[in-house]
Image 1 (cartoon, rainbow, N blue to C red):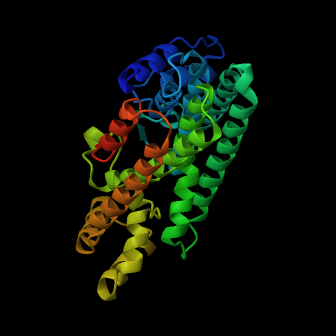
Image 2: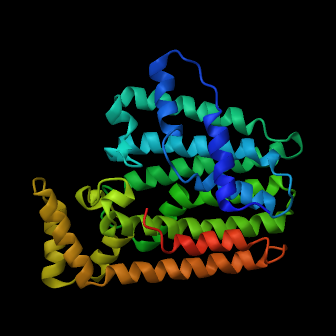
Image 3: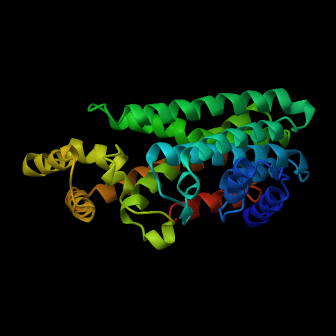
Length: 324
């Protein structure tokens, strides 16, 4: 039985073995830079773990897992441009290290490479895997568009936000597990249960990110803190605050949201004080805990032994206390 650590090592080895042309250098060097950066490779490793639930022969899931990781990193390149993020994994984002045009084109090339690797999936499951991959890729784009729509929408609800992060973040984690299960020979019921496990886990993962952007150590987290606050990004924390705040607290919150010029550190401090006053951190942590409970129920129903599910269960537990 494979561990998460072993799966991460397998993915890392294969990623570093990807052969890219030397020229044009400004197309391929950013791709080398991205796939060579230190990362946990969570999504592709989950695909291998899901495959291993049903078979010890996981080789057939490696190429689809690499496709998932390449696709994920393609989305990060473009997201960093749209979010104007300076850092990614503790290093300059591609559009900051090079420029926006290079980041866009290199991201496009990564997407093409992702499809190259998904096409190497075993022929017996290629059609099914490709259908999941295509559906998920489009949903991720939908989620990003909803996220951008929220910037000008003043009536975003918690329900709206949870649906957006399901599409933008959660479905790729869910699809990673489902694709791995399909490659391992799982039946429809088990692959769907793993999808639901990943779906709820993925939503919780994004809510953790919302918390970490405000409360984590930037050295540990690997990117500038408070970026969501500065951008007035409608996270679970901000939306919940706008619902719960009353009187002067609500007025202060809206005043800061409307300001065009402000001191960055001061704005972050004001928002954190408001979040603390409204117990937003505890509220978010409670929602995360509930989502983990739902995820665990789905995993419990997957028709393999408890021992085989141990790695996925431990991963889910570790996610609850992650710091980066």
